[in-house]
Length: 107
Length: 122
Image (cartoon, rainbow over all chains, first blue to last red; front, side):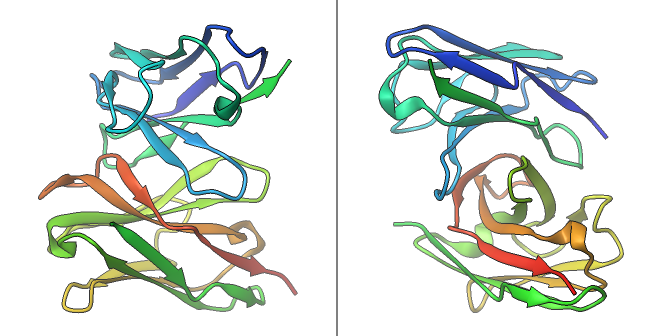
């Protein structure tokens, strides 16, 4: 199975900060990567698909990049609504796996 | 609007069985693969099982293979997950999720249900 490793596990940041989360795959997944935002008590929300395509309705401060084995999710200017846990997910192989998550906390 | 409504969660003893259901609305159900994703309390997300729109292809995580069976009834817009030989490690919130790509295999997920809690304990 393809393993997905996110870093950092926890990130403390302030409103207005630029935030970057990294996701590494154990083998090449081309651009078959999605990013989700998950808040407690809510359903996860798709933010980015195919590594860099912004899901409809998602604010443009979110962006994704990368291919192969290394990917990043960037929030250009952190907003109060963005404090949540973020997950990457690979959809390259017939065993769909998530990263362990990155919790974005208020500094 | 797309809606996914899970049911069937609850409390079960180790070794027991449970069947989850998910009723979908707001889209042409048979055109989309569907999956179950779970979250152990305090832990991350884990893809559990998926099924193609036609029902012709089913896929399982190694952790549940041989114990769980996914199925769907396209005439009733309903997804199922039959869970047998349950253990404490299966305690989690189970989400029904819709695939984003029409007429495709499992890819990424654009709609999630609110989840149903399964608790396995003696």
